[in-house]
Image (cartoon, rainbow, N blue to C red; front, side, top):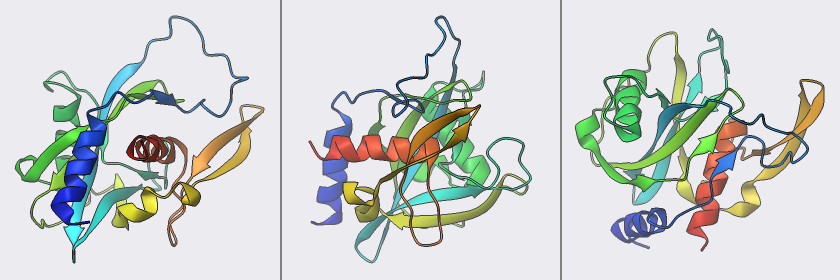
Length: 200
């Protein structure tokens, strides 16, 4: 399928209401407290084109970070007072974290929000990066920026459910490994939600 047709397909899919997801989707025995306060955040899923194929940029977080060191993530973060909305927050954070100029991103749409175990409600923002740019990882925050073919991410067979002990309980979660990269947790769950939406 030509690149423009694939982008139109992504844009069309994101127009439909998807099901909100959370870090607890695979753990129905975990009871979330009523009235919990979640902080809004936006992450950018930057899609690029290389040799006629679409790829998604992801980051590996610095091992020096207090939260989620060394994990694979979308560029993004919490909504600040100066941000107009979650899209603006995602674009601002992507500029800060990987040097992506906001003006080079065509917004394709947003995915239903995802609740994280750390108390955020995250909106994934999908955007097509029109032109090549100089990737500049934020020192101390981003250890590496790499790309994954979206064909890999959109194949349900590449997702594996695994488990580990968390706060004395076994917690199940999605993974979608790619080469040396272990993509798991919230990032993998949001990607799986996108995959499910694209399969409709």
